[in-house]
Image (cartoon, rainbow, N blue to C red):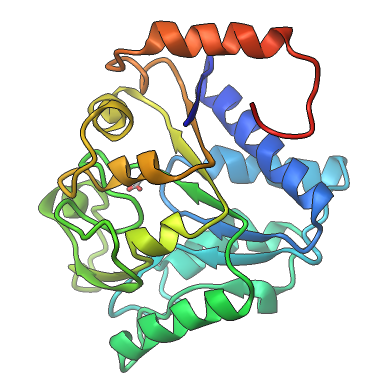
Length: 263
Ligand code: PGA
């Protein structure tokens, strides 16, 4: 695991955009796994800026989102489809046909989940998966107790998630289920970039990075991935025990010449 503790949430977004940008430059038709929620918003803003000012093109990029609420369609104001269009897709030169999200309004969510798995495989797999971490340690909507080998499927949302994601929409019943990539699906991505900012994430981050590998903290599964980069601000990193070591790694990195790969 490559752990970066940076000075601010903005620095976290810039680092994550650097990683995405390097991949897209190397592989213009890269397949990105994307997440919704508050954390990646600054990353998406930075990618939009680079698309406009630095000519970072998404023309051949393909995207796969982690999850979607069950029971709501792509035009629903609270859907992740809508969130992705508003926060990224409508603002960059991506081809909408290359943006894939699970359909929460599918009449057969089990078949929808299976078809999504098959689509990811058919397209050659995800090169880089962006992940946030829930306060309860979830990744995607893989709530505590999820199988660490799970595939894309329907999951019931945890109470903590329902509270955190309160949609507060008067006109519809809040979803209590979602379709989500499984933890096994996420681990199949060639690289992971995990982002967390703010004090509310400190406990989940510590459990994920330094706790036991366990279904009670689904994000702990990232410990199994051979190419996981975790980018944190100081508040999210506050409960880590190996901070001194992460700082040493950072110092050591600065002494190295640029290499062709990750050290
Ligand atoms: P957040 O959500 O970025 O809105 O905190 C993270 C998550 O639930 O995965």
